[in-house]
Length: 372
Image (cartoon, rainbow, N blue to C red; front, side):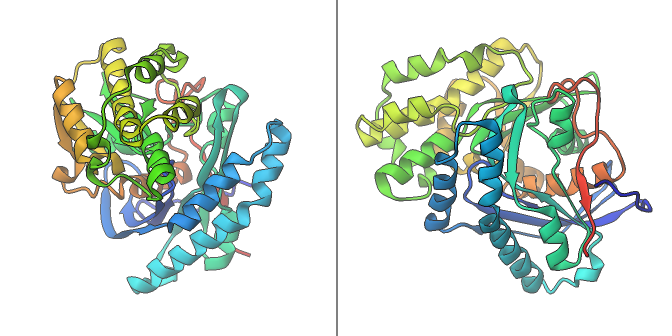
């Protein structure tokens, strides 16, 4: 239920999120007005254990196919995510000795477990109501619902924080986020444009787990030992997703049929091919969409994969900069982002529109939960 609250100019807000890589939880406490002012106070990433990560992935794999059953099934499995969020938020508050009364809001991005814009459904686990009641702090969450109700993709949802970064540092650049999925944001004639463009880490991570029982391929060392399987890569390049117009969005498991084929070949070749799949989204984006920009600013976990970074720099004729060079922690951009769009939502400011998710009009979003 939406609640009218007295509006402040600047809020202290705790952004909490777990991305499509499903490798942990990021938490960022910032002060912001939701427009042109952001101040970082405390922030930290907390890693999931491999056991917990696999538990979440198993829940996703075992989902039913029926739309109504999917929603009920995931809600039945939400307690696990609630407990994880509560654990790490409490740890964060204790670690930085933060007085809960000093926080105006928690802005919660739940763990995305299913995303299918064609069926107008995007499910994030993690209850704003449970978090609000547990910490006695007003909580805003469920950012994608209003977007989907207005015919949007529901993702990528944080474009307006990327706009803030671009306006502050270089609005002639493009930000590309390398999470489980890759997405971009740029500004053209003051219009914010964004979309998913392909895979980033999800197939590499899943194969590293499958072959080596590790969460991710650190620095791409394992991938660099292999060779490209051109048959599978060429099949991937011809996937219908790359023919769709932007804005468009992806579920992290959309490309599973290619991942399953990679599981049947040499493990190093599989990882090498999966890494080149991350390049395909970039190349398709640059070829199909004739945007002019000076520089690519990379954020998200994939920017740490030195092998992937080398492949991108060798194959893309654009300057590539890591967002960390702007003195922004690339591991925590999305936690900052949800804090920022949380305040925009509280102020009823735009968080998505026709050129970011394909909504019929510029809209705000989010639901506010007051503690009992």
